[in-house]
Structure formats: C-alpha cells, structure tokens
Amino acid sequence: MRAALSVAGLALLLLASGCTYSMHEVAASGYAAVPTGGAPRLAERIEAHTWQHVILGVTDNTDYVDKAYASLLSQCPGEIVGLNTRYSTSLGFLSYKNVIEMRALCLRDPPSAGPGPADVPGP
Amino acid sequence: MTFRFARWLPLLLLPVLSGCTSLQSVSVTQVPIDRSRPLRAEVTNTALLGIHFDNDFLDDLMPQLLRQCPRGRLTGLLTKQESSLYVIVATRRVIATGFCVYDSAAQAPVAAIAHRPPDVEDDADLPEQR
Image 1 (cartoon, chains in turn purple, blue):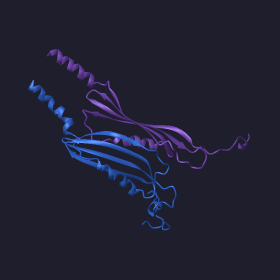
Image 2 (cartoon, rainbow over the protein chains, first blue to last red; image 1 turned 120 degrees about the vertical axis):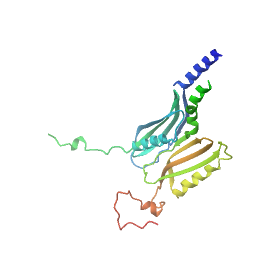
Image 3 (tube, chains in turn orange, purple; image 1 turned 135 degrees about the vertical axis):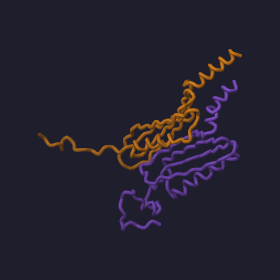
Image 4 (cartoon, one colour; image 1 turned 45 degrees about the horizontal axis):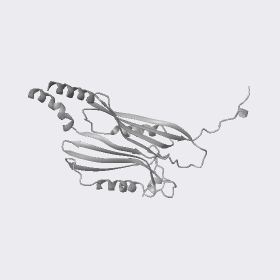
C-alpha cells in the first residue's frame, strides 16, 4: 500500500511539474496579397507572442489572444499576409501557461527615391 | 485521514466553483491596409452539464458579420472559439472580429463613405449620413 502511494505520488509530481508541452493548433493563412498596382512592396517579418498563466485551471477569459492580434496590427500599418498562428500550452506545477504565437509578413511600400549623388551639393 | 482530505477540499473545489474558460481554436486571415471599419460578431450556446444537442448556434455568425459589411470584403478576421464551465453550466462561444473593406467607393454605403476619424471636426460640406 505504501509503495503504491509512493508511486502515485511520484507520478503526480511528474504530471504536476513542468515537463509537458502540448501544441493544440497550428494555422497558416493569407498568402494571397492584394495587388496594389504600384511598385513591389517590401516584406518584413513581424511576430506577436502573448501568454496567460493559469493557476489551478482558474481563468475567465481568453484576452491574451486579442492582445497578440492587437500587437501584430500595431507593428504594421500596411497589409499583413502569411499569417501563422500557434496555440500551445506548457504545464507547470499546479498551473499551466497558454501561449499564442502569431507570425506574419508585413508588406510595406518601398522607400521613395531620395536625392541621388548628382543632386547632392558639393563642398 | 478524513480531516486531512477536508483541509485540501477547498483547494480542489476552487477550479470547479469558479469560472474556467479555455480556448479551443483560433484563426486569423490576412489583414488589410484599410482598417477604418472594424466589425465584431459573437455567438454563444449554453447548456446544462455540457450536454449540447446541436451546433446550430454557429449559423448566426456569418449573417451577423455580413450585415455589418454589405457588398464589402471581410478580411483580417480573428476567430476565437472558447468554452467556459461554471459549476454545471457549460457555455460555448465563438467571437469573430475583423475589418470590412470596400474595394471601390461605389460599393460602400453612404455612411461608410462619410466615415471620418473622431478627431476630425464637423464639416457642413459632407453629405448627410443615412
């Protein structure tokens, strides 16, 4: 009986400590940029990463997802394409952490051509 | 033994008695340059003991979005599916937020054309919103 309790305690310790990671969902979308008719735009990698620490499973919202999305939008005034979203959880001691990662490409207009070397006034 | 168990009981009951919300699914579509017309739609379905008899509550999501964007293009849609458990009541919720884009001004309703940022002062020359 005592041995069984010890094994159960050890198993519980392993389960309750941070040794498990789970990936719930991976999504990729939006790889068709809307043509603007102008010069080719520059693509820049952007990413947002937010999480929610949950103790004993008690939480009442999923606002961290909205924060990741708002962060992504704030990083890019232009079109955002090639969105990759990951939703995962890492387990800790009597707690877990929900993590959202959003990676995307921000399409920016190329910088306008400045004055060329011929236009620079000489000394 | 009974006394020891009773001491831990409130800790064990804490997650059950309080609301536990978890994310089931999330997806995002590509985000437009024009983000002046945000929209939001939400549908929920509550059931006792988590016994749901159908998924029809989802059918109202798209009409809600389309009503907010007639003849426009829905993009930048962030869709979340979450579920909440309150003791014996389970609620499923799908929330969609995004943007309505009109590719040409002719498609946009009058109210949308006349949309201006709130910091712009009123101008008598602008057409009336209908």
